[in-house]
Structures are given as structure tokens and as C-alpha cells.
Amino acid sequence: MPRKPTRPAKEIERAVRRYLEGEAAPALAKEYQISRAGMYLWIRKAQEQVTRTALKPGTGPKETARNERISDKLKIKQLTEENELLKRRLFELMSKYKEWG
Image 1 (tube, one colour):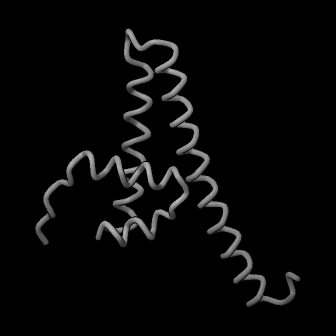
Image 2 (image 1 turned 180 degrees about the horizontal axis):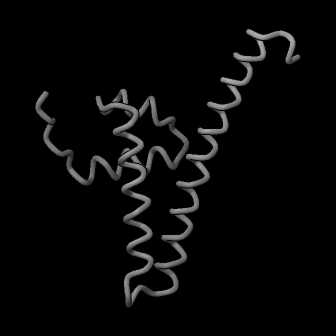
């Protein structure tokens, strides 16, 4: 299957910003008509970009601190979503196998 053309950087930034503001990655993926894996790829690439920028020579302390906050926020959001997914799966398994309760 042929690949879709690359999205404009502004569109990707907007999607990642909305993710950071609390919107769910699966909902954003559906809206932007990409796979969930594609949305998480955008998020990971944004995090890598922030890290590269923070490590670039000549980056001032304010810029570095800002990039670290963004990177931390991305990590927390991803871990929170993963935690929720694991909790739901655990609940499903506990419901299925009553002897765990």
C-alpha cells in the first residue's frame, strides 16, 4: 500500500500539543486519520526533538528548562495512558478469573 504524504510540521505540532493538554492519543489518531501507532510515533519524535534541542550547544538555561518540562510532560502523559491501559486489562482478567478476587 502506498504511503500517505507527510503531514505539515504545524499539524503534527498541533496534534502533539493537544495530546499534552490532555486529549487521548487514540481520539487524536482517529481525528487526524492515522493509526494509533502513527500518533505515538509523532509523540516520540516530538520528545526526541525536544531532547536534541536541549542538548544543542548554545541553548540557554531557560530554553533547556522549558524543553525538559515538555519532555517530562510527554513522558508522564505516556506513562499515565499505559497505566490506565494496564489497569483496564487487569480488571478484565480479574473479572474473567474470579479466583483472583
